[in-house]
Image (cartoon, rainbow over all chains, first blue to last red; front, side, top):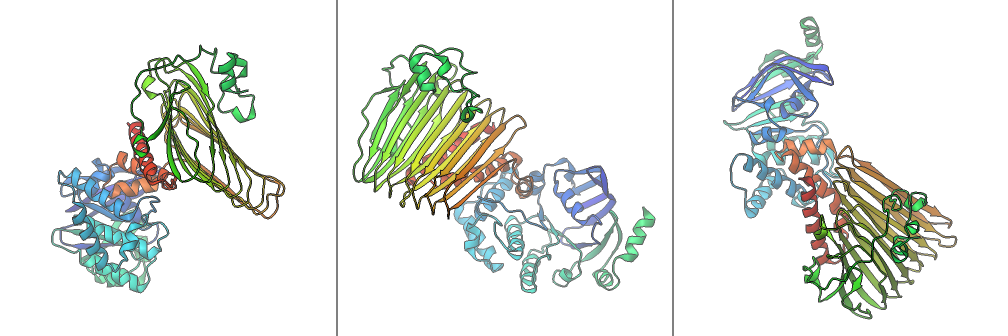
Length: 252
Length: 350
């Protein structure tokens, strides 16, 4: 599914990712943990194709397709979804309009038929209900004036409606209280499927109590320095990232 | 000194120039070398107008000549379309229609049309000076759409005299010309009278569009709300000059002015001068002004969700201008303007 090999990424000529390798097979959920400044957000933005994140070496493929050769919207149509750490406000565009535009653009890019208005509304109502969202909120401009928790819920709603092949969740737990965390995690867990992969990027172990990963990777100083089972997350919680920061320094 | 006077007298020194403070961004003197002969009459057919389906009262002013009479409005609700058309033979013309509105509602739908002359002698000069006298109990909503030739020099002035208790709402949508200026002057008596003065300029290529407004509050308890937005690309130039004067004694005036512009190319330009001059006490006045590019964060966010770059830009640009369109009260006119704006933005993006 997702295969990253020796990926190098720079922002404004500053090298952030220095030979990162990582594979996530279909049906699995992998966590990437690491200290602040390790390059976690850079990894998610580089995979999504954010302007300014320059891939200077290595490869990143999704189902064998070279992601780095595609525009952000083409990556999305191939099935890549990024849940933003800080979702953007879109004044003047109601959430429902935005999501329908996105869904139909993806379908068009894949040569599929547009979704009908009744089918779309049915889908939106069903998914919003599962996330315990007030449907009226979907008629408001996307994310404008929403609380942090509401924005994260809106991200998961979009993920549920767009049904991606690969979901990248960037610090999805930040800004969530315990109830919101539970609802958002349930939303993510119901999306686990044999044909789908997920990459959960987080600083804290807390989120992984709710979204149980199959594998945990430690990202420090721009590369993966350790990988293991779910127990690795608990070890990081107990002992911190110090030991890995040193490993990374030596390797650098 | 005005374009209309220059057209009447044939004297180019009557043209406003950059030396006039109010015209420094819309210089006509430096542009127009000679005043051509007056426009010839045009007796041929004219195409239907965009607002024709909303009313049976359509006034056509072709090459400066009024074809059908203006209606005096008194009582009830009336929708009147006024079409200023530059037709074959247009070279230089001016007209000064006057309207008096008593108790009642008037929806005035004006269009400036000359795009059909583009490349066919569309270099006409035109000035329309409209006077609106709105008496107590009267309400006027004025919508102006401009679709002039890219070679035209077109000035429209509107002088609004408002009685206490009357109201005036305006939305002008400007597509620009070689030089285009829509100027509105409102004499605001307060006394519960209210004014909404909105504008939108959508300019591309080498077009120039200028929205200039001046509101003078002279009495206690007046409300003015003003929202202008602009989108410029190519080598276009947008101008917004808004002035609200609150005279001594015009206490409890509530006046708000906003201007926001999107500059979508390196060579496009926006000049803005929002001004509040306050000589009264106990007023609530505010103004805001922004000129910038599309939000890159929002653009990337939309693209990440699968919306291609060009479509995402169009969506955000439309959302940006929608606020102005949404404030139009007359539903039929609002939907005409919405469709017109979408079409204009689509044409300009290609």
